[in-house]
Image (cartoon, rainbow, N blue to C red):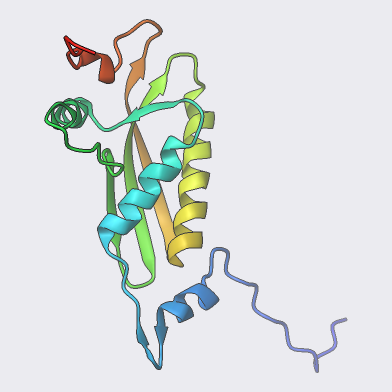
Amino acid sequence: MADPSVKEQAPAVPGQRTQETAALKSEKGSTTIDDAVVAKIAGLAAREVDGVYAMGAGTARALGVMRGMVGAEKSVAQGVSVEVGERQAACDLALVVEYGTAIPEMAAAVRARVIAEVERMCGLEVTEVNIKVDDVHLPGEKTETSDQPQPRVQ
């Protein structure tokens, strides 16, 4: 029989971010994190996972190649869209995977990596990371950078 004088404690909520979100708002001011910041962090984190060849749907990748041809830098947030609130963020990623990669395991690794990095760097709870595999990169296929013309003179 349980001791009636001992009150049961409520279980901790998984994923609760009390310390981190408290750091975003204090009596001295508040910190807001722009969607573009979270998108860059998520894009870089996803690219670190083995099996991710590129990010973005076909059109976005083609535009990235065109930007590269005119000298603009490639966007690290390509293929990433995010929604950021005061305490939470949600991410959608479009990926191209290497042929032979086990997609469910790669998706789980990308999801875990993105959640860990966004939560660590931003202090936001990541509510979801949706992954859409748009293409498979086949061995011997032209790469995005090989589409660029080679210089005539070195």
